[in-house]
Amino acid sequence: MVRDLMTDDPETKPQERLPAAPKAPNDVAKLSARQAREAREAAALRENLKRRKAAARTEPNG
Image 1 (cartoon, rainbow, N blue to C red):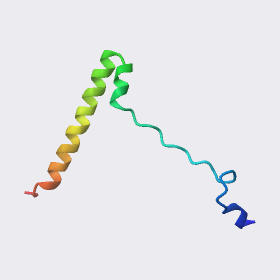
Image 2 (image 1 turned 90 degrees about the vertical axis):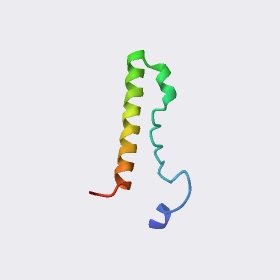
Image 3 (image 1 turned 90 degrees about the horizontal axis):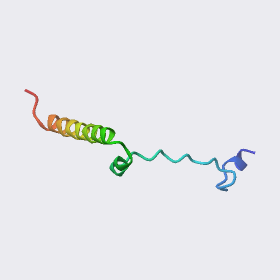
Image 4 (image 1 turned 180 degrees about the vertical axis):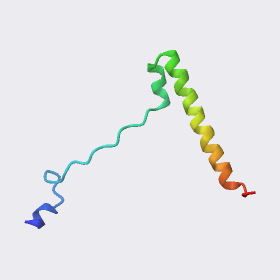
C-alpha cells in the first residue's frame, strides 16, 4: 500500500501549488497616479535599504 503512494504517476501525485507572481513594475500602468507614485517610492526605499545593508556589511565595525 505504501508503495502505491510513492509512485510518480502524475494522476496520483499531489498537485504542487504555483507561487504567487510578484508584482512587476509593469503593473504600475494599471494603477492610479497616486498609487503609481507610492509604488515607485516604496520600490526606491526598498532598493535604498538593500544598498545600506550591503554597505553596512562591508564596513568595519568601529
